[in-house]
Image 1 (cartoon, rainbow, N blue to C red):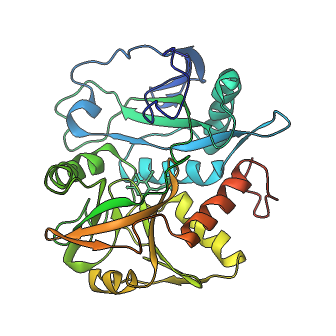
Image 2: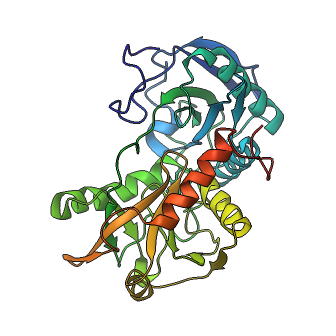
Length: 336
Ligand SMILES: Cc1ncc(COP(=O)(O)O)c(C=O)c1O
């Protein structure tokens, strides 16, 4: 690993990298084969398309070590499909799904020794950037591109902590735009950042839940669920927010555990009503399912239960981890 720290609970997510990555280049209308290289600074022309016009997208997924030493990637096909969708929205060239899969597998195999025991995992970050040196291309796609997969061993960020997150509700502005929220692209994170920074400063919030005009969408880096003993509720898929792979996994898992799934648009008022009796949680690859302890709206605090991660959130999180780590039957064939 490039940082001597092991991926302990103390290492911040994404700050420790394995030594090797895989890289492919797009030039003259074709992709080069993937090549394993050292993780080192990239050579980019200062006029590179990505640096000016944000032609970039990425994915985030995890490879887990099974008890027998085998390594499995969680829902690889879904992540590849989402990356292709992001690339298409950005008019970026992208290797075929088969080439993406083979490069992702190769870089995981190369760095296999770095994979911690579950709930730790190897976090995989496939990244695609437009590299054509042309500052005149504001209204044209990049004719050249670079694809690489960086990998990062990650630990368990939850062990011992039962405290719920503090989430600030933004009820005016949206994170991205109505048609671009489903792209996993750097610009969407950049446009959300000022809201996140303000919420941290003013409310010591962990994250912001974007609810433009009262429509509950997602946070800066996770999807959103309302949960109780019998039901889970979340916004139905549309182009305004990222279609989380964990969101889909929680929905399928919860259905198989007997919960009623309600996919419908709902408002901040309905959220505040729900937390009088129920739970709230964020879903994403990094943190799986994280309970919310309190919301802050217009400076006012709205507690969720006793502020701890709720029992149903805990139960669903454990059920997901049991599948990911190979401890429970992989009934949906999610591990590949
Ligand atoms: C904006 C946003 N929404 C939702 C998610 C959850 O997506 P997934 O479950 O695929 O990690 C993420 C995390 O990648 C995200 O950045």
